[in-house]
Image 1 (cartoon, one colour):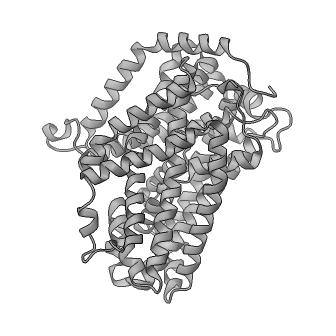
Image 2: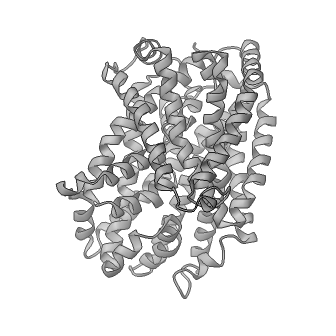
Image 3: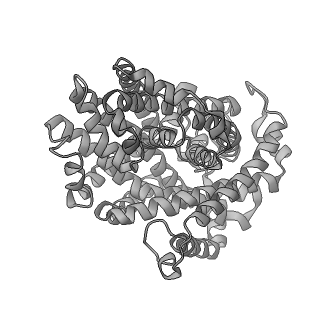
Length: 489
């Protein structure tokens, strides 16, 4: 059967696969830290606003574009805007692929800490001992390879393989996170964590930084604007609704983040209230791989619940990595490469280009910074595509199709305009915040958190993609003409 004729067998299977794409380590290891560092309840207010002002509009856009065009990122931009815009779709696909190169390293970390918990190695004698002795070593390279192998196995089974894996992993992940959250709620002092997380302070809402962090978190943890939803939407059945699915994915994803916040912050306020500010101020790696084991060590049955926590991280990372590999593979398939060969090429590239991040933490941090900013550009390109096509026309033809469960009104037209503004503003803010007084330090290629690293790497990728634009657009058009439409269209 042609890859283009593959479809999800049911809405349930599709939604679970989409949730697997959206729910990742950013929900479980990043959200609690960002929420705690930005006022708790005050952050939640801004976070919900941007769920509706960034994530949901982009999710609706990607669902509509993927289902209507039945093509990956490059092909969908060519079909929507014309052959001159293949490079925009290629940019979106490349950014998600670049994130894949180091995301597999993150999944490898979660695997190692899960195994270390089972063997009793975690936590060590000192909070950072195990982490310091593992990251940036050949051991991290091994777990990176294991992670890639696990994800490649799922993708190699096709759309039904992705769906089958999601039907097991996502319910299991939900159960694990709920169990951990319930356990945290039963700890003495947990009410202080709940009060912090769910009590907004109106005075703090005047702090622009809270709103910027809330927008950033939405861009990271829902997968909106990555092109991953667009890729999975290719395999939707013809009678599936786009708008309702987008709302379900957005709110389902953020519900997982809230559960993770309850789990971590209630445990922090119960076990180490005196160190709360130090814990929540730690970086992503610090909170997850240094402090979390210490937190679980302080509660009865801590080793068991710590194992559940890292197993949940493994499942979350696994399903997200599967989506990234599928997206990259789909790009190659749209260019005429067979599915098997495309997966092999993506797997080889993932193994190779993940090595620097596995062996050097500075490279990992640099890539996380550079392509995190690039996600804002990807979001802008999606919004630009719709605005150029005609936002009302796009809504009528791509979203409000016959059989839709709910109809999207004119609010979405304005929401997409707002998304374009948000994307430009946030990218500009990130670069402005990273400016340095010494230009020699600012314009270096692989140092973490500087403007030059972003600009140089962006420029290299954009020049290559623009030069390849005509060849890419010709290839996707030729391939699209040679394969049948999906069943039911």
